[in-house]
Image (tube, rainbow, N blue to C red; front, side, top):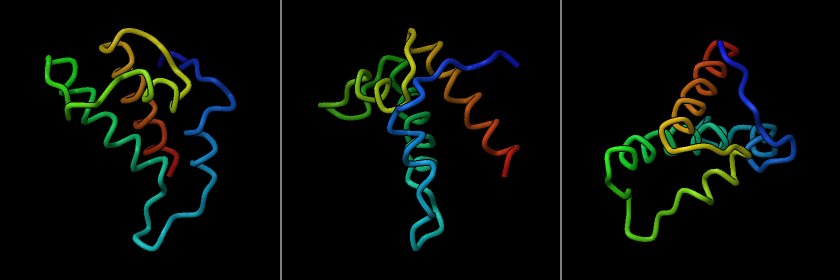
Length: 85
């Protein structure tokens, strides 16, 4: 598996340390899942909603790259976190 380059002080890593909320979900994991969904749409030419932009998503996760590469990185990150838990 290819290593993922990530900014060490990104908001995702800060949110990952937060205890799960009442529903049992961590906000970082929720954002990861919904961002993967949104990027799958975006790579097919569909914006998830009118004001959606990819740059805030990249900043939140502390990563960069073309949309297809960025999607692969997020899917790899999701797979790593699933194996860890």
